[in-house]
Image 1: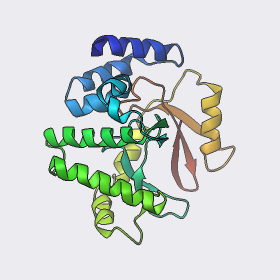
Image 2 (image 1 turned 45 degrees about the vertical axis):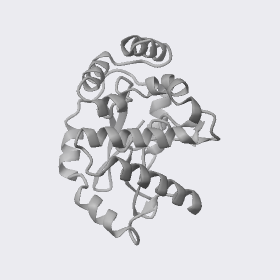
Image 3 (image 1 turned 135 degrees about the vertical axis):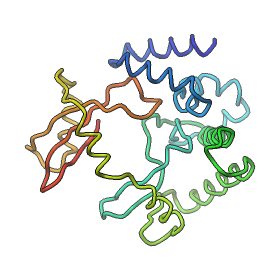
Image 4 (image 1 turned 90 degrees about the horizontal axis):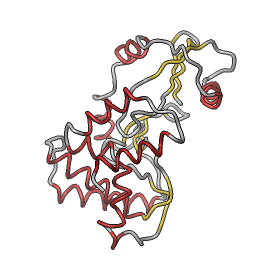
Length: 234
């Protein structure tokens, strides 16, 4: 089965389960054709089809709750309940029980592709060694993200310099038109549960982001809260 047929079958299967947005699927297909790293990000379904065949010797490894669609751009920062800046894996929409080797192989593959596209400045062998070393250390520590307020100074300085400009972020979000069509009640309930207070007035927009999830409905609730805007996504 070639990639075109595999993509059609996957999208047909997905469309029988959730509504899909044709214009976003077109964006996804264009991104897939742009470069190999974007192709990897957008085609986790194809990875899962080929994994048992191409990596058969690793497919019988012990299973864990894996990330699944893991790649070097699925790491980022967020604020925890204490307001501390944290770095770690931040995308779990394909998580399931998988051989532990799958996450490692996919992360290493993404690093190799990014290096080939000149998006990552490290030798391929060093990238793989760092992934294995980090995985072993994380297992030994019980598995946890990096809290940057006290430790990992070099990483804190790196991500602090790359944090998004909030004015540009909110200007872009505020420019999105309010959805006129009803959204699923489950999505509305999830958004209302995520908002900081019940009873807030909010509007819902559709945000285009990511690659693997392009084509799926993505709802964002925007509200004013105690002197500023807040947004929650479902």
